[in-house]
Image (cartoon, rainbow, N blue to C red; front, side, top):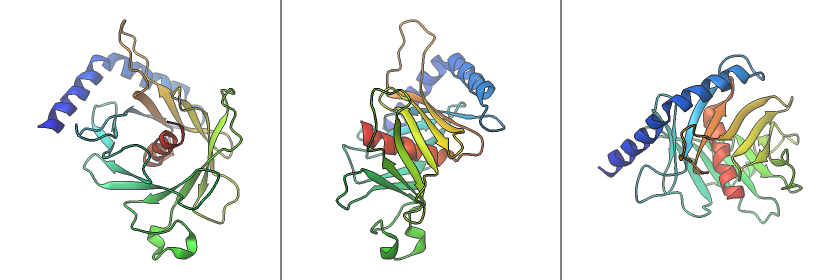
Length: 228
């Protein structure tokens, strides 16, 4: 019953601003000049569907549950992204070795107990597919400041595959590929109804055509750990 009540509350919140959601979706579709095809607009709510937990809830423009994160407290060493049915999609793990640069590894599914170093994985399926490294030279005063770099796998790729720039604190970020094409964006959700404010706990995740929405949400979770 608690889940049902929470979901009804979220549905009511989205329906009140349904006109704004549709307007934003059309705007993102019209301004998508980095790839062909339409963007996918997701609404991210920094709140778990379970009242006793903290986490994230992600819905699409139809109000359907797409992703969720539960039991999200403080600064955990591991965060699991699930789909709407509760199946593990990606696991993000903080690098445990003493390192001045904060690094997170992204695994497919629910990774077993393993050390994030290639030679110590018991099976190849446990190897990370990406890792995210915080930019140590970040300038907070620069609106185009590079927040983090995203690399493929744990080793072997010295050049980043993606980079994230902007300000996660203000929910204004872009994920860029090696050619500086925008593949995903984080934007504040603005209401066109007087007296209504979504704050920072509800925001848009815009995923451009060809980019994986699960990876985009994984990057949101890592950024939340790095900058919240």
